[in-house]
Image (tube, rainbow, N blue to C red; front, side):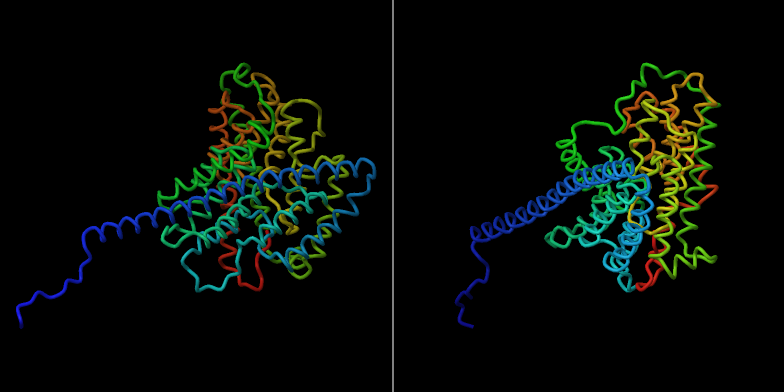
Length: 455
């Protein structure tokens, strides 16, 4: 020991402060980079929703034009298109079949359990197939919608973005999927509030509160993009409900809820049964010859379209708007025709959702019920209530259902009636059928990679 001071290993105070400042600035840069990437994904979801909507509208308009000029055209395009779409889906875009919402729920449910070798259900490849094959199916005459597919498309895009976010952000993948799915449905319907409620009511059960900011930000950005292209519009126009709404009629509300609850529960149960691959000739045919089965479903869809003079083809938005605005009459059996066409379309295994067709079925049932209950409510208002009730019964998400319909028709004057019908119809449906999307999601979780469930 010499008594001389040993050299210090600590940096001077000024150097330590500078180092901390640089680290803080680097952390801020990574944080804002992650935010910019996330916001860019929300913008992309909005743009995809706009492009998908335009593509679907073009397909529906083209099909109707061909059907008007060549009445037997659907009998050619429906079986051929259905067979082609199912073959491409199973061969190149496995996971794109059906609605898309069960796939997102299955991916969120299996988060953290990577030991089970399940096929991927969310990817950019699947999103591309969802758009192209879904549009082809609708052009072929199948009764499907684009809102459920937008949930899977939005979640797929956010899943891909999540792989590129800085790791230090520590964003839960489930939060990204819920934000992407909610933004997709909000942009598809142009109903931001409904997107938030859908994420809370269906997608985000059991997730932490940290997710709320991601969801709201994604929905707002996607909504701004869609409104920049389409404007502040509603799908079915601005119904002057406030000035004509009458006092509540409990008897009619109960009748609407009962009819929609039973019909919607039966519809959801049939969707589950027809896609279960169970016993019976149809189930065996669907399992062994899926492409041929899709062609057979196409023939049935064409026959239903011919019987309804083309009213069952496509999403059903045009027919629902016609019933709401009372701008024309549809056959009294339109609701039943659309019910059957959507059921057969879903069973075929083509990509497509049931939100829009369910609204059209509800409007068709409202047309029938309006002939029985005429006093107090205008026919268009009965259709609005039946749309919300049937959608709530099918999806068993009553809050989302009545908010979607309320925002789509600007029906704030009927908000109490919409809530009553939606809640009652959803409760009745639970006694008829288990939750549709969760039942289908469980199939994906139980399935082996080689034989994914269809629907």
